Image (cartoon, rainbow, N blue to C red; front, top):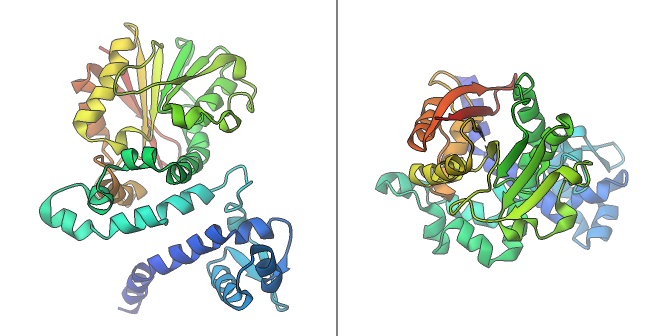
Amino acid sequence: MEEAKAKLIELIFGRWRSQILYAGVTLGVFDVLAHGPKNAAGVARELDVDAGMLYRLMRALSSLELLQEDNNGTFSLTPIGELLRRDHPHTLRGMTLWEEGPLSYSAWRHLPDLIKEGKQDGFVREFDRPLFEYLSQNPSHGEVFNEAMSSYSSMDNALVLEALENYDFSGISHLCDIGGGHGLTLCGLLAKYPHLRGTVLELPSVIEQKELLWADKMGVGDRCTYMPGDMFREVPPADAYMVKRVLHDWNDEECIQILSNAHKAAPRDGRVFIVEAVVPGPDTPHFSKLFDIHMLVMVTGRERTTEEYAGLLEAAGWTYQQTWYPASKLLGVVEGAKA
């Protein structure tokens, strides 16, 4: 009984933990401490905030093992806290700002009503328009969203490379990343396979800031092209396509449209790789089962099983081949071949 209560209490107060984390990131605590240990008063001076209240927040962050406080009231970053620095190569700062920020927070409150009424429109209920339309009209929020997607990419990149470690890319010379953001994962594959060239298809607003693009930074700029476009209209010709953390944003009809556009542009022996957090069987706890509720609240999409992705592929003209996983199975790479 006591163990069950403790587990339940941990769940009940989960929002407290995530909002304390969000406040620390928003204020810039982790960026200030990136330069070395400081007491709360020193951090408060740099951030121009109330020192007493900031101390209480930093003490709470220490309780979450994001900071470490010594007996003299000096705080330093823990290895986990390091990942919340803006300049960390694997930063999760953007993910924190988006998932616990005001837009997501406000939309989630509609979850019980969505389930009662069978309508997947939490964000629309709160903001009177779909998520991606709202972001296009509110650039400051769009920047936070793009930073969050970069956070996801930094986490996913190694997982995709691990999942495809034994895949034979010798028959592929041109890989197009549909909705590929700033191109981190595609460029990781280009760096590993020197014979490959790549194209990132993205909205103009995502790729217009050239300093955020990965190709030149990773030494593959001569083999990577960034192409503005709309995946719902058409995609460029390529031997193979990667669609990473895109399809889960959209309903089945919308997914089939994206996959059909790729099928139309692909050669006879073309391939497509769907990279998502694939939902496992009923007896397996998995983050995808939580992420699926986030999709229910925020957009029209969902997380799917391998069988459901195979169904989407078939409806768009592809033939399901197999699903490739890293050891952790945090995500899967669902492969389809042009029928």
